Image (cartoon, rainbow, N blue to C red; front, side, top):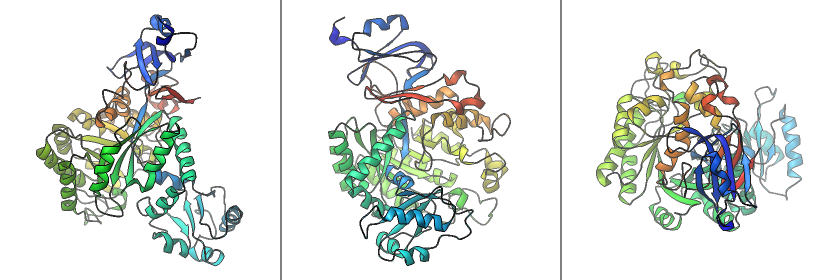
Length: 519
């Protein structure tokens, strides 16, 4: 073999999951110029090893295609690390003292930010008046650890038009747009974000972009031009400050269809959160029997927007949490199918509670499920979980019913709604396959029949995501000619007891043939 045909890297393991079938095999993966050039038996790897080839032998680690988080909000994640870290503060005064130190690092009048505080044990509760008195002429915004409250002054409310109680990413879009304008700052944040995801085996994301992405496209283009974009970014526009911007979609479709930045259409919102009684249910809430949804949804508006997007050639994702919202979303996407056939791989995101009848309809229409696979772990235990309390014993088993989706023929992909959760493949395997809560309850797993086998969870993070984005010929599995996007777990999860799956670790990540993380 000529020197020019030797691989840049040869990765060896007793356990390789190529994704091309369900087998886990011993062997090697050869990588050259950003692509997989060969996958073969261990005894054949020598033919690819030249004097400059980097060889990594991972022993019993599992080599797999890199993982894809199908639902993230990078701009929203910025709030979790914005400004001074107040997590160690035990009182209002301690927080003010740290904020005063932070203010000295900035020019007079500059906005002040902070994050991570928890006032549950503080004797005095944070109030806007305290910040008004100390900082009347500069905006101050301090986001709490749960990201559901912002301790802020009147100047910040006037400047950015959100309130302490309404500080979710959608509400603070004006602030996020201001932060994105600070190019060096936001480039640094995206670089940190990419490194964090690389340490978790994530090589690509589908990021939700408010309106025109708030200026992030310029940032991503600069990073790419500099050779510093270490994460593939697929993005979908979510109308937020204005109606669906089809002109933006037309421009983005023409300009962003490359290997690193791709436009993926539109995300449309329906209902809210079941735990807040704003998820739209087919039957009333068990603990509020006069209510199916406190916040009615204008499905007609969503229907019209989805059909227009489909007519113009755009992929559509509809967020739906409650089973009534899921049913409506399926009907809307069925109408899209009738309009344009199966040209576009539309999807429904979240699907916290869904009815089996609608899963069959999803499968028939090839509507893809984007589920938040780690969400079960946001409950400390089975006893403390809210599903039965809100929906009743008869409907509890319809929550997070991924196994039912799979049996119905629905293609399942994995996301996190980051920053709600950060992607954690071991956690997702534990939650979806073992169906256990963080404390290990209940015995035998929670509605175990609605879990998915480990091998299928891996497929959902890899091959199914590639299919969703029309990239199954380029990504999602390990085969010659595909992207060299690769992750390695320290052990083969197929051989790990279910209760121990959370103990797995990502030890190596490669994106486009470049090592972006190595433990």
